[in-house]
Image: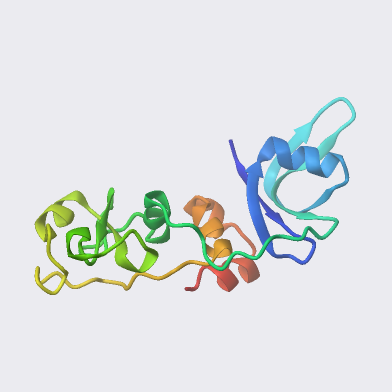
Length: 170
């Protein structure tokens, strides 16, 4: 099922919802379609509207302030776009830059996506000890960054340019 990006009335990314939920929000006049999938439509006996890709809520929703996205293994893989931080190949595991046995924890700045071969080769050492430099440094994504990175690559590339560059340039 297609994911639809939900923007607040202020154009701030809030979440993603299923296509069905997005259509319901539009039909209830709680949201408007900002961008639609070209050529795809939802049709019914009394309804004919484009399949929404991005919707914007009509009323502003107050969101509790969250400084950073919660850490998760899936989040690290998504942040690094499933690319190994050591060789650039497809990553399937998460590696701790400073191993847990050396005091490293499960944090955004201490974990990177890794292929299983490099994760095994690095073992219980730091990248310097293993002579395996990182191709990119880990970073802490904002909640909006994490949500936009969570969209599939094809869906991200189809977002409006202003939304893509504002959040995923980190």
